[in-house]
Length: 116
Image 1: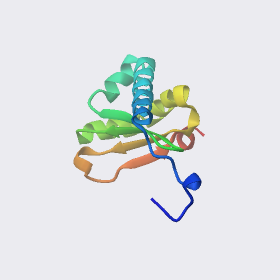
Image 2: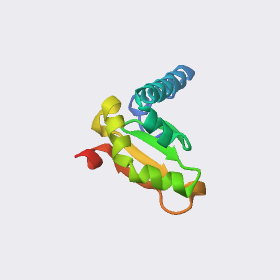
Image 3: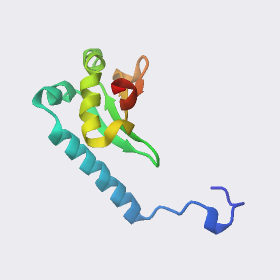
Image 4: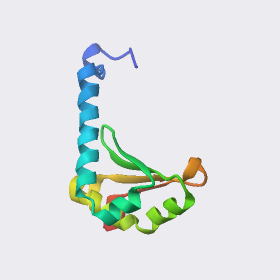
């Protein structure tokens, strides 16, 4: 932390309440997204571990694919994932897809880029 700034200009320290509210927001997003998905989309996402990462000015839908097949199936149907995300988050979210064991290149693309 930059201590050369006056105390009023520094970022406030996160409290345990801040962290708990952040966790509750992530859980609510996960639940809302899951509940809004069709059975077909849930089947597509089932092999992967996924969660929302919430930053100060960003919202990422993060997918970790356990196999190459799962990775390429997600890539092949990424517009469906983007449309579902847009329904609950608008076009500002970003999709981050990681291949198995972080082999190869991860894909990071905004919902806006995919849907225009």
